[in-house]
Length: 129
Image (cartoon, rainbow, N blue to C red; front, top):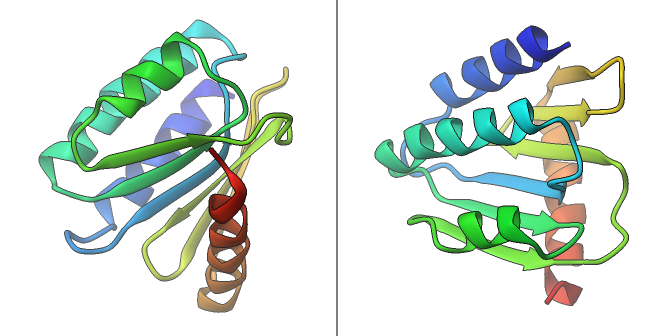
């Protein structure tokens, strides 16, 4: 649920070093408002650590606009992305988030898996607008 997602995201941010990047794909505002509010606050902590992030959103909207204006952030849109969000943290962490009830997440600690998802992200980044 919400607490588990918050714990996983906080742990991932705490272990990501300045100079590493965070990549997110399938980012959407179409989820419970408490998640959107959490991610906005979480992202302010990321900005303070000067950790760059790139986001591929599933749709444009107010949530997209907030992230588009953040420092150390780049955001693009690829309409119709999956209802699941995938975040890649640094060299070896992948967080897969499902916001449908019951909300859940899976954290994978593996360099090869992170590399595969990073490659996939950048292929989508090229075609996102």
